[in-house]
Amino acid sequence: MTQTLGDVYELPQEHKEFRDTIRQIVRERVAPRAAEIDAKAEYPWDIRKLFAEQDILGLPFDTEYGGTGTGTLMLQIAVEEIAKACASSALILMIQELGTLPIQLFGSPELKERYLPRCATGEWSPAFCLSEPEAGSDPASMRTNAVRDGDEWVINGTKNWITNAGIADFYVVFAITDRESRRLSAFVVEKDAPGLSIGKLEHKLGIKGSPTGSPVFEDVRVPAANMVGAEGKGLSVALGTLERTRLGAAAQAVGISQGATDYANQYAKERVAFGEPINELQGIQFKLADMETRTAAARELLYKACAMADRPERPADLGKWTSMAKLFASDTAMAVTIEAIQVLGGYGYVTEYPVERMMRDAKITQIYEGTNEIQRVVIARAMR
Image (tube, rainbow, N blue to C red; front, side):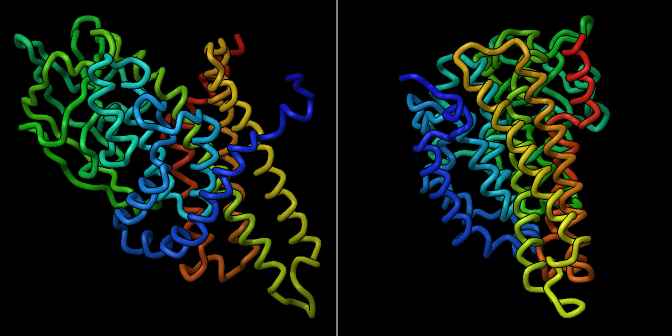
């Protein structure tokens, strides 16, 4: 079939239909829960069950493992739709990709068969353990180590800032396996492994419905078969994963931006000042116009990068595009939510209205999945 230029910018019909279904689910079931999830800072098991029943948690996976096989673009459209209403709930889907993509990209057939189908159904949820108290943006300085002992590896160390801590059924853990050359390897550690404990959970500015904590590994033994990828190649596993999963942070940011813009726009239609709706005031009109424009630009960059990630052969400049999408979308989310609060005035500053929560949730998108400073380094290096 000949593709016209217009087709390039048109979502496939099946994507639109799935998006509309997700949009309805979010409007009817997720949005009414969003404020409570934030206020109580509780993991929304009911929302996860809902996503599992609706095949939403199957989005990151190929059909051979029970997933939808619909690719990166459809996955991130779903993240965006959920994040419009509740960024914490969007993270349930994001972590399904982040915690399993190392296995999808680098794992043995046995690891794929063991873990991916259970995640595709939503029965299991994973976690991705890279960051440490002294090693955030610089993973090579991590202290967690793994030592070979016969057919097993023995892991010792502490991780930090780990999404799904205490919730996950298994953890993909990165550890130093060659002290002299500081080489990392990755391992799958199941939640009931002796010696694995969950330290304190963090009290956070936003994304309060998703637990973030510090798994501790004390002489945790895992079979050698649980290594993900080749020994000493853990950094490649981590970077290869993050190159793709930072699109989830970008999609979450776009969703937050659109949710805040839509709410502020509707409020401006109804709020009267000086005898007319405030959307008749040019100062408010310009804010709303900039919010909508920046969000649309972020979405285009996101979809472009997603489409590149979906190509059969990895484009050489994929990393640059995913970094640009994450950088621009997250900066946009922060700017847009601040303006949304300004449009609402005093009402924007109180918890009865959602835009203050959206601003608190937006901030982390500039930090996790690689800080925006790191994204700028990636982009600049790709330009050399």
